[in-house]
Image (cartoon, rainbow, N blue to C red; front, side):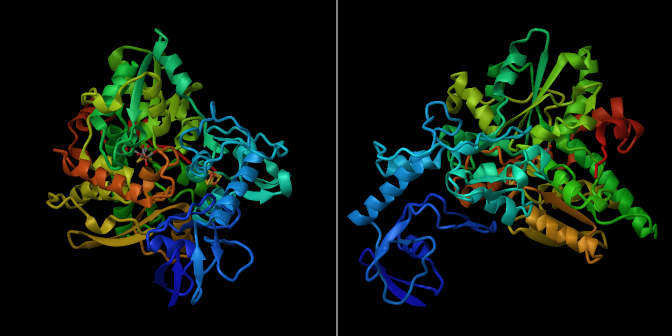
Amino acid sequence: IVKLTIDDKPVVVERGTTLLEAAKSIGINIPTLCYMKLEDLNFENKPGGCRVCVVEVEGRRNLAPACKTECSEGMVVHSHTVRVINARRTVMELILSDHPAECLTCAKSGNCDLQSMAQKLGIRELHYKGEQSRYKGDKSPAIIREMDKCIMCRRCETACNDVQTVGVLSAINRGFESVVAPAFEMDLDKSSCTYCGQCVAVCPTAALTERDSTWKVVEAIVNPQKTVIVQTAPAVRAALGEAFGMEPGTLVTGKMVAALKKLGFDYVFDTDFAADLTIMEEGAEILDRLSRHLNGDKEVKLPILTSCCPGWVKFFEHHFPEMIDIPSTAKSPQQMFGAIAKSYFAQQLKKKREDLVVVSVMPCLAKKYECTREEFQVNGDPDVNLSISTRELANLIRNANLDFGKLTDEDFDHPLGESTGASVIFGTTGGVIEAAIRSAYEMFTEKKLEKVDFLELRGMEGIRKATVDFDGLPINIGIAHGLGNARKLLEDIKAGKSEFHAIEIMACPGGCIGGGGQPYHHGDVEILKKRQKAIYAEDAGKPIRKSHENPYIQKLYKEFLGKPLSDKSHELLHTHYFD
Ligand code: HC1
Ligand code: SF4
C-alpha cells in the first residue's frame, strides 16, 4: 500500500492505483474526457491523451495526467489549483480549436461529453483557430461516422478492439490528419463491423452516431395508403424513461405504448410476442438436437447457439464461418414479428403485405442492418421496413411535444401485443436461455416447472456457466455477453473443448439493455444494472411467465403455423447464414 495526500486529505491505496482512482475514493472528482471505465465489463480507456485530468504533484515540474499516473509514497497532490485549472482550460480550447462548432444542429447536442466539459470549465471564447479536419466519414445502414468531430479519445477503439475483439477501428495518420478509421480507410459496410454500436455508445461527441430514420417513420405514418405497425423490443421499456429525466430502471411500458398511439401508429404491438414465438421454435430445435444427440446421432452438432442478436450473427459469419451450422436457425424476434405481421396479420386485415409498414423500436443499431438483409425480404419488400433506436423514439416523442412523464399508461393492441415474462427477459444477458429453459424443460420432461426463476443464469459476469437439471438429465448452459467473451466460448467449441449443450450469446455488454441505441450511459455501469433489475421486475409481475402458455401464440399455431418446426414455420420463421 501507499500513503499520499490529495487536496490536503490523506489517502491510503493499493500500489498501482492511479491518482484519478485515489481521488475518487475520497470523494474528489477530477474531470476527465477521454478516460472511461465500465466496472465489470472489461472496458477501460485511459490513453492519457486529452490531458483534461491533469493535476499538480509537489516536486514535479510538469503537470501529471491523473488517469495515467500511479500513486507513490508521500505524494502531495493538488487537483484544483489555478495552474491546473488554466491548463485544463487551455487543453479544452486546443481540442475545440479544430472541432466544428455545430452545436445547434448536432445530433449529440445535450448528450455530448465535449460540450459539457466546455461548459464545466467555463470556456466562453476560443483563443486558437485550428485547421479543420478534411474527413467527413461514411454512412452504413446503422452507423454514421463524422470524423471531423472525432477528438481522438480512443474510446471507440477500446470498445471495438478490447471488448468486442472485432478490431475494425484504429488510429491512422498524424497531427490534424489523424483519425480513427477502418483499415485502408474503407467504409464500415465494407469492413467486418458487426454494427453492435458499442463504439457509438461510448463516443463522447457525434463522431459516431446512429443512422437516423425518424423522419421516414413520420412519412409512413402520414401516408394514408399505409397501415403502420410498430413493435417494441424488450429492453426499450427499461431505458426510454431516462431520456425524459426518469431514474434509470424506471419501467415505462404503458407510457411508451401511450406515446406510440399518440404518434399515430395504427397498431402498437410488442416484439415480446415474437420473442415467445422464438422460444417455441428455438426450444423445439434445442430439444430436437438434444434428443438426436442422446440417441447417438453423430451428425448432430452441439452446443446449439442462440441467434437473435444480429451483431452476434454478423460476428460469427465474419470470424467463424466454418461454424455457421451451429447456431439455431430461428430468426430473431424482430424478424419473426415482421414475417408474421406481413402474412398472418395482413390476412386478418385483408391487406397486401406491401400496404403494411412495419417499424421496430430497438435498443440496438445492428437491427437497422438486420432488417435490410436480403433473406428478410419478399420480392424486395422487407418484413421490417424501418428500425429506430430507443434514442430516436425519444426524439420523436419530443418532436411531437408529448409530455412523456404525464402520459396515462395504455396497453398493447392484440393479437401481436400479448407476451409473457419469459419474453421480457430477452432484454438482458441470460434472459433468452432462461426463457428457453422454462419451455424446453416442460416439453422435454412433460412435467410442470414450478420454479421459473433460474438465478444461476443471471448476473453481469462476462461468461457464466450453469447446469440445469432436466429431471435427472444435466443440461450444461453457457452465457456470454460482449463479443470478446463470445469469442472465448467459440474458440473452445472449435477446439472440441466445449462442455455445453446450449449457449446464449449477446453482442452488447449486459445484453440488449446495454445496446448501442439506448440512452447514453456516460460510463455509469450502474445504469445497466438498474435496467436489468427493471427487466426482471417486469417478468416477475407478469401473470404468465412461460412462452408456450401465451394464449395468442397458441392461437397462432392453431390457426396458421401448425406446430413448431412445421413447413410453414420453416418458411416464415427460420433462416440461414452466410460465410
Ligand atoms: Fe433484443 Fe431481441 S432481446 S435482440 O436484445 O431477441 O435489440 O431488447 O428486440 O429481435 O425480443 C434487441 C432487446 C430484441 C430481438 C427480442
Ligand atoms: Fe466495432 Fe461494433 Fe463499432 Fe462496428 S459497431 S466498429 S464492431 S464497436
